[in-house]
Length: 205
Image (cartoon, rainbow, N blue to C red; front, side, top):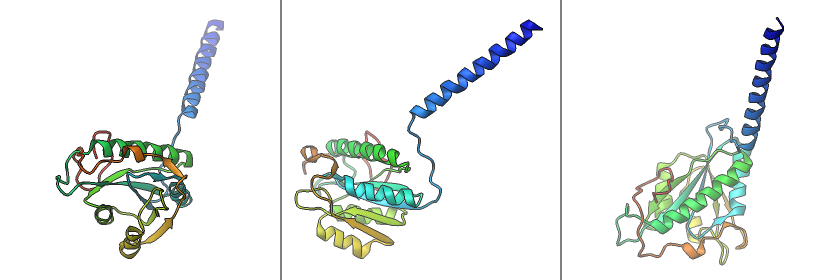
């Protein structure tokens, strides 16, 4: 009888230890709960930089509405190259910016579905994004002098053509989440195939 009691105590102690270790492992991981609604907030951005202020505005809105953030990297492909041509430097920029967005979103507890859209110009890529993606709102950063974001003409075009609600923020040039000015793609550079909007991977842009 005493031996059986000791065996039961040992088993219970083992279970408690296993549960404790599991709790510690789960606590060490940054987990993001699935969205409570199917709302999606579009956040287009370009290779010249990513505005931390605009991103935070999009993440606060997504958290308040329990929505998914849809960051779309707009890759520009030179006219003399095929639209699905490889663009390694833009790919590296896109991956760096995507990682920065995901880290920021994890702190807000917001799920992310990263995308990439190709176009000959920013506006061309924006047009393809509006056609191919489902979203409820758009948050976009307007460029300040020397800072990241979209030029006034592109913002005006977006306001005229994009459906749903649009939030435009003009951050200062010191408020970039990640400075990528030194790695912006040269017009003659080429990258890996990705036609239209799709999930971002390290080998594609």
